[in-house]
Length: 430
Image 1 (cartoon, rainbow, N blue to C red):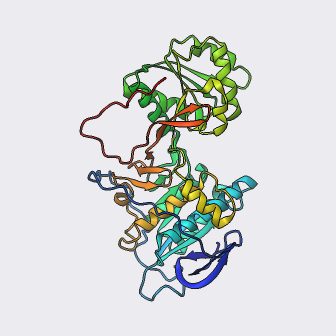
Image 2: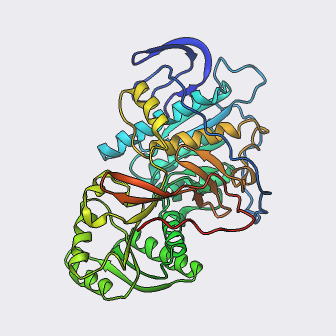
């Protein structure tokens, strides 16, 4: 179990090239010190009552009061119940890239702590490691020290191992997994879930007059999620799915030919990177008229290199608004000297959310009703809210691929309130 980090302003410490007066203990990647706080995430203005939630199974040993083994720091006043936030990330994972990501997400969590200005919050870190067993041990350690909420873990197998342990103490888990099968029963997914992206892009395309959809999806679990989400979204919009083709490593041409012959007026390509930039011209070579078949994408399209592929020009995809995280990125880089990975914003938002709810009654502040507020919350990448089943919704923009980058053609919503009279989005020039 790593030492803890608290935001009590009493002790001067140094971090990189900055000086300020703060106090606390930190032992993540050998860092200790202070930061210039980034802008705080603020709750979305209330617009609707909280939905009634189905009753959850009772916890066997709910955390209801201070226990002798709970962690306390000397700078926490006697008689005060500190807000203990557990952070469970794969610091010792076998992948070097994953270890770097974990360290970056912990740094983002620290920034959120400073930004909160709440000297009564303690971050306690534990290692998710590379196995569910390690993650489970980390969760037990966090709970033994009094964590009222757990931020993380990252991988779905870890979430499945941690969930029953946390539920036994009635402690919610804010996970970064995208696998919705591990959500619910106290687990909430604060992640970029592909289902949100697909529902947003299909809904928008239908509003622009596209009714007949096809899809090219990979032969993978991700492809399965995309397929199910697309079918649900098309059914909800009143459109038709004409064809769904799986892209295999050995035979792409058959799938491309079938989609080209499907008479669809929009095709969803659930690929990214170099493979996406290869598929688009291959689809055109099959005789696809881009004036008649609109290319649609998932969040995997959110890669600046895609704007250089002329066959993707004019394609649409759903993603957080461009530059939404610029302020966060600038302050993170100014503090730690490196550019944060995309997922770092999730750790920042999770700790900011814990800080927002920290003023509630000890051991009753992170309730299901509080976490699933129908009004949602405003994070670095836009608004989000948790559903009763533990999945989440996000406000996403619709972006068009242009030669000089991505252009917003339908902005992300700033509220989950539905207007009194729904109006279709304005049609952009195609």
